[in-house]
View 1 (cartoon, helix red, strand yellow):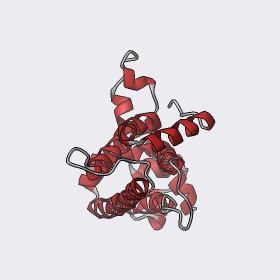
View 2 (cartoon, helix red, strand yellow; view 1 turned 180 degrees about the vertical axis):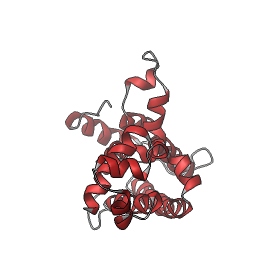
View 3 (cartoon, rainbow, N blue to C red; view 1 turned 60 degrees about the vertical axis):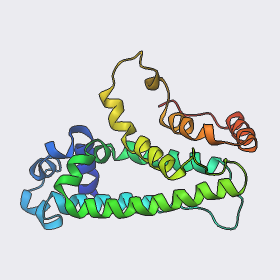
Length: 208
């Protein structure tokens, strides 16, 4: 029953936004009493905490592989997984500011998980530098800022698509992964660019 409740809540949250869905609406949609729902999840905060735990569990798969050569496709693969996560839990990213302000326990966990992701991203960047796919850091190249820019773009991509409806706006014509690559491409070495071009021959960029 708990999984059924979670699934229904995610569907409602995605459709209407978390702030616009009450626990009673979740109960009514499942044809159960509010008391029965409260037995499984005391309130919306408890329900959201379990949903976020599931989301975080999925992101544990976005780690660096060990004892193997890591290609540039690993970056794309991580971003594709995150893009898929955003689509399935779009309410979380669309309502991120509201969630952080309203649910402090989730905000704390979200901050901690982001710090882990920043460290992992830095390890990947360092690896690409060491294997001569990215140019070394210098006075004009600060990869910590690059990582933060990629995080900002990927995190708020879905919500900003809702805000920009102008068909002629150029960024609306490309997908999230293409936009993220546009941030990293200027820092590729000749070796990195050659590998990227090989990647594009075999893997087509998604357009959504």
